[in-house]
Length: 323
Image (cartoon, rainbow, N blue to C red):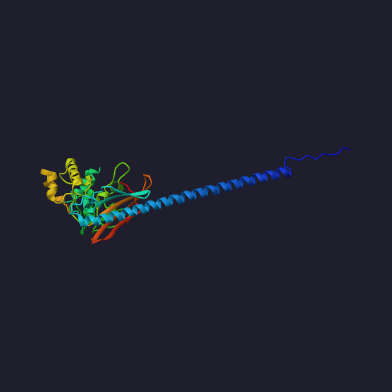
């Protein structure tokens, strides 16, 4: 008899062990790579959070600086101090370590107060809408509907709307018959859309030109943006540019300065102009880190109530700037 030789088959114990080792190594490598990826993501998230908080604190510092400057401005407005911060959205920046903030301040008297609108001054709101691209008939509807929304009666103006209209909507509600609490409340008024109020990527909205905090019926030319100046009856582009140039050199102290700037066209604008500042301001502050172009934005509206005393009327952090 001849001896038999047994040969190892394709699934010998040694081959199975090798395959198991390779599988275990593969699983371990996947686990290690997963932990490495997770650790990297956690590190990046922590760094992003840290930088975000730093930018937030810089923006908050800008809000406090703006408030301080407004208190100083209020006490020294007639002192001739050329270092006073302007309240017409002129940008001011300051460096803090490897970060900085940029602050813009707007006197609320340079905006159109929708709570003080009446049948005569509603022309300002209508012109503002038309200049922003709203059709004339839609502007008529909005202007009358705003007045109907806040008046105490249920009588319709020609193009307006009262509770009977709002109660017929899919989600019914009544006309407020009282002042607006916020500008955003305009979205409840017939004819108002988010595109008109907030704007689109192609053009800005009107929300930054409106307020409920000035409590005045006129527009302060020392603070009003060009878009609002152009809404004044009789105002031309040349006149608006003259006002902006004049106030950049020296703020107008009285109506006589406005008359000097506008000349023969002043009588048309006079009923809608008032030079006195209000006690309310909106402060926009953006904090930046290093050379980053994208910052953290905060918007605050503040009213001054006495010597070095103030109260926040509105505070949003972060503020997504639409306009």
